[in-house]
Image (cartoon, rainbow, N blue to C red; front, side):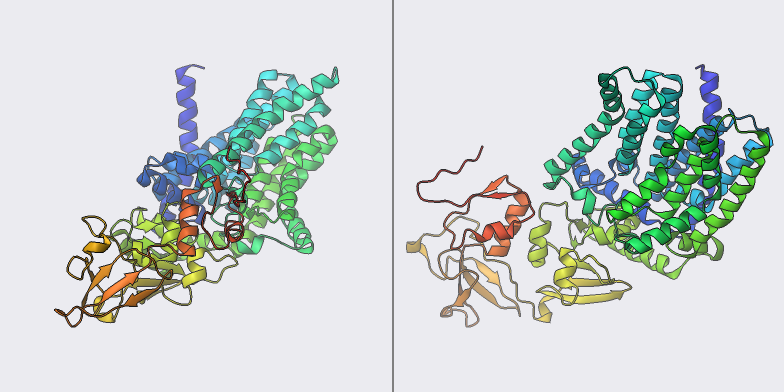
Length: 590
């Protein structure tokens, strides 16, 4: 391909992207930020500012997040999303050019796709979804070349594109499975070995992609399947709780309603059944994907589902379709645009459309103000859970002030926030999932903290000032000059410790005694307010458990523990083995 052809294609893609880019910029100016973009931006900020690329193991989908790492801002997400949508529109146009339709009819079909509400929302507010659809569409085109023309290289390319699509959308394995199962219908098999080779070509790259991500998740997150059920994943119900775990009757109703809202998709299905019946099963991947996901408790966002049906319809029009039927397809496309407008009555897409028509919403302006205030705080001063606070972090444009679940000290900071942070941010919104911070502090402040300003949907706790009667609950530490021997102990060589109300005390750190207790002895004769404090040097159960979860060893062997078997209960679900010592019995650690 010459450079002129490449330049021409680039200009065409840029031109098709421009309407989406302008629409996305306008929505951003009015204060709108989608949950999907907020999720991606927050994860990209975390990776960039912590300087830990391996933390991608805590994030899904990784491909759009990595693309946003150089510039994790809403404008970057909109630009990348619009360009992906422009490239998708160009691919659809080249596909339509092969049909024996007049130019005005092809243009009308393309405009119908681009102007659909679902398409506009995805192209401006869901970079991961439009990137996944672009990869699936490119794989579909290569799959047609493989099955129709017998081009083996096209089969390899289709399989690799689907595997790459897994890193943008979990639904990629469904497409890979559908391609692999239906490919034998279009080829003349010579032997069982030929069939096995075809299945491996089409499905093996996706298996490798899924397996590699499971390994990365286990290596850096200690949980290989976390991306399947973590509420922080864009796959699940943190963003759309009403669409997860539906009853069978609700699945049937919603599925029929979505099919009825896609007349163009149904019309093309009739044409495929008439001219290319063997391809009908592959064409039905979209509704089969939706039903499969719902049956497992996952979600398929309505804009994603409807846009996928639109694109499958235009990409699947049989080449032998007569011109007169093409005009009928255009009418069906226009009807589908109107039917697709029903998706704007509820959910995030409805809020997006309302902002474009009526202007900024007060809740968005308040969220922007809160994020700006948080961005001014010192690094590591705010304990938060980004599975709830991801929007505030994305709005703030920095993850520096926050201690988050991927940080090694998070579990310990949740148990004893007064040791590590000055502020605690707790979600007060009703939710089916309560994180560790919400479970502990939604109804009461942490020890040593008081309730701060009231924000919509949030509880803001700040460390109490000394004049508010705050007694430092931190453990007592050794002296800076080293341990003190028993023969040297006296109230003069013990470190001074502030215990509130302007009083000073003398601290004897470490030693024996009851775990977690502090006893007072006689005061210092030279200072009537002094106290000689005695504290155990042993950590409590919560502290030990937090330390183990932060280190994430393969095996824990509790030694000198009163109830070592309890650690199996404490560490259940963490993939950490617990070896209980038995007299005379070895413990294999390899």
